[in-house]
Image 1 (cartoon, rainbow, N blue to C red):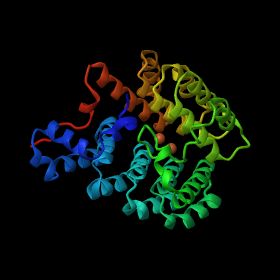
Image 2 (cartoon, rainbow, N blue to C red):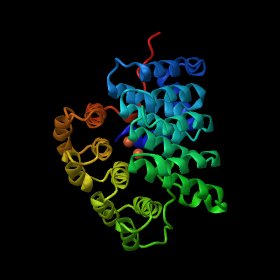
Image 3 (spheres, protein in one colour):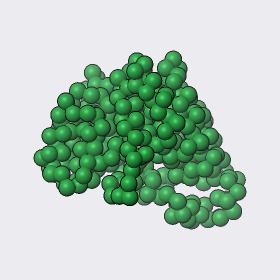
Length: 332
Ligand SMILES: [Fe+2]
Ligand SMILES: [Fe+2]
């Protein structure tokens, strides 16, 4: 199991309670010592990438201005892995105060990697404020990376849809508590129909994403197999989301396909990164050796993802429960 996929379940008051239990001192939580400690971890460039990654997702759950500002700084980190996860976390927090920083990242084609700009565009869609529309329309045409342009298309549709949403807004909420980049297709659709839409290269990206999320929400071998089949689709953006969703599903039947994706040096690093993190999430023993091999990959996005995945797996193999991944005890 991987923090990235489940951390949000510790949202709100339950998470506050957890922190208090973990710290054994309510005052430490309320006076912000813990949060400051985690911020320091996130921004410490000398710290192991896995610890910084865990700090990042802890801050996502804590929310609030301190977390937001730290994540905004992290979007400019030299590690594209960390920088794009920071943008992802800001989107999941749906904090409107993060919009100016996300806009600046999306516009900065010179110093922000395409995966970071992609995640900034997706975050703007997740926040759903119409003020992002003009910029998303501009990047939809001008951004040099296809994965960013495709993300802008999704984000624009999501914002339009959020604007026109009706009373059944909650009907398609993700059971994984993630803020998805597209609404799931109606749950009345058959698996065969959803598979057809997902794999149809002529369909719009929003519809294909919607079909995939509906399949994920349905679950079961047939749905998982349909999602795995989409790892062969043309769009790298779609393939990376497929790998992410397989990480959420944690179904061992997808391990072999994800291993093939990680091994494929010609595959887009963004897709290999999601495959590595998904393998960490599934935690199948056969993937450990592979993650160790690709921890040495020449592409930092891939090698760092393997490092993070192995770190989480190692922690669990020692018999520790996920909760103890959150924080180290602050030094007094
Ligand atoms: Fe992404
Ligand atoms: Fe990612």
